[in-house]
Length: 108
Length: 122
Image (tube, rainbow over all chains, first blue to last red; front, side):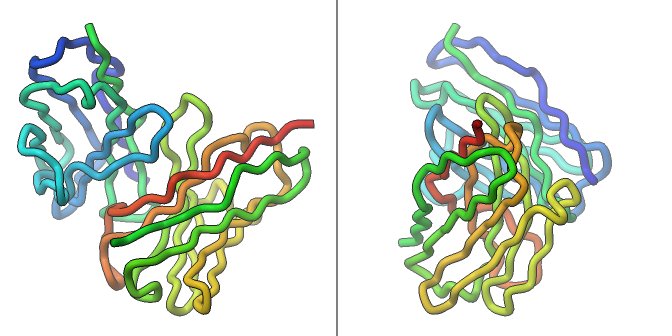
């Protein structure tokens, strides 16, 4: 099983600031089969990024993903109010599908 | 547009079973695998298993082997997740999520149901 470790656990930032979230895998994620999701309170997760760097339909360009192998990054260039939420990375290269434990982006 | 609509909240006693439904619309039901994910209150996401709506084949994560059963009804485009021998630790939101890949290939979770809260309490 691929274990995903996200850091930091909590990120305290102000609206308009840049957020950088990290996801590290216990073994290489083949073909960059890594996705990112945002989950707002009381809602289901929403897909942001797939294939490590491709934005999902309707996702604004302030979201970008990068990385390969075992190290991946989600960057939010300028935080909007709706971006204060929890973010999860997920690998879908091999079963079982696994998620990181999440990074909470909170208002400073 | 793709929609996944789940059944309503449930309250169960320890030792009982629960069956959650997920009705799909807006696409060809048998063309995309469906996953089940659970989330305990205030906790992270945990993948439970996958079902192929076409043939009904399933694969479950080891943690739930022997307690979970995923089925489908192609006549109503609905998938089901049944969890037995419930304990308090099973209190969680249960989500269905449609795979992005229309076939036997790696897929992310493109569409999600709204979630069903299952509470296990005596």
